[in-house]
Image (cartoon, rainbow, N blue to C red; front, side, top):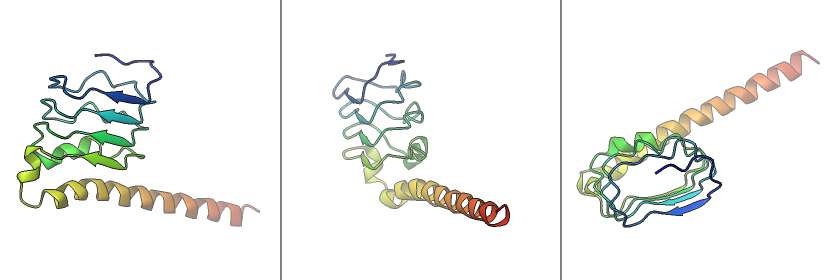
Length: 127
């Protein structure tokens, strides 16, 4: 599947027997993606979806919380559905999943504060 240069904001690929996530390298307009009810085990391939807000992954075969690292840096991602995946049966899976996302959010916040301090510094001393 190749979605390069298509202006798609919402895509439903539910129940398509997808095993690997490919073809999203240049899909920067995508906001909503439904990959539920497939055979997905890894989230590699989603890391370039910079405008993605909603990601539905229920009823797949995701078994490791560390797969969240592939989507943890997506700046607008607010809703992720992992229901009915093997990862859900792991002890403390919610903590592990949120840990991947929260570490990135904290780092982004620190960078934002540093930029504000730099701007304030230059505006104060260069005027």
